[in-house]
Length: 412
Image 1 (tube, rainbow, N blue to C red):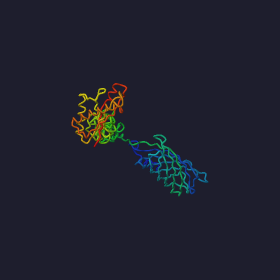
Image 2: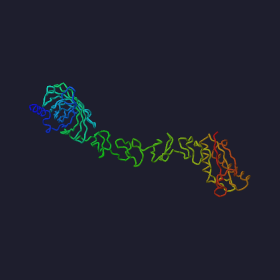
Image 3: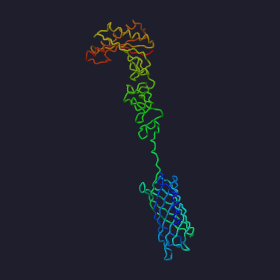
Image 4: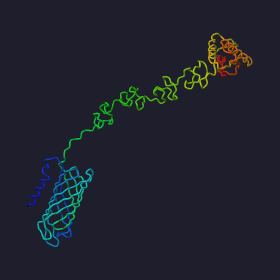
């Protein structure tokens, strides 16, 4: 009886105030089968039932007390039975608590009380050591399984025990609810923050995202072009795309493939200062007057005086003199050019007559150019008759266009 009282005192020391404190405890109930050593006086095996009370001291370590009871263990070759009471103080070391199965080591030291003592089997000190594991059945109930060796110092025996049972954890330490995380310190908790990587000191909206005033997908704090028109594609800086880098954004660029370095107008198209159809960036004759046809380099090759001669006439009307004077001015400003003055007619009349008439028309313009100051050695004239029409001779308007004089330019 004294031994039971002593065990109760130890239990009170280990588990005292268990229900008063919010800490980790567990109560376990076990059933065991013990296989005896050949040296012991008992039969080969017997059943044991026990309870434990353990207290957790760290994440891995527990300690506690254990009481087990064996009823009517039989002595070998004797018609005699005995009850066995065992008392342990145990220590446990758990591995990897975060797994579904928690393996652990157990070691303990205690006392064995034998009711019917014989010289070959007496009460005395014992120790146990082994391995086991626990797994959750429910949140507050676990299944456990152990294998242990029992050392009986008094009787110099070594037994092996297999145990299975239930463990009830309780008294969990209450922890304050974790403070909601705000990784980027913008005042919006991560669970509600749609932009969790906002840089420090950037203002954000209720969803944790910085403002995007022009709704171009680039936040204001990194938008170098904060007033982009709605729906316009932008680059990473929030500025309108300009694929050909001509300074005119794609959304209003009417010529989106301008060559690099070419000057453009407000529509993004290459400048053509003299309106000759050849862009300035490849125009080698930038000051070509209006009315001249040019080659692919922008240099003049022909000039149509647009003189509408009367039928059967080579007389130049006064209203066409400014056109001749314009060409004369060009020739004087560009002394490197020579010109062939070509006369043409419509198809009315004979070929011979039209050749003579076209020659006279070319000669009329030639003479007038010399009067306006163009050197004679830079000019020639020829008549082509009706050979080179530029319009149909079946209509009056077409025939009028064919009655013309043109200057064909070439360099000296």
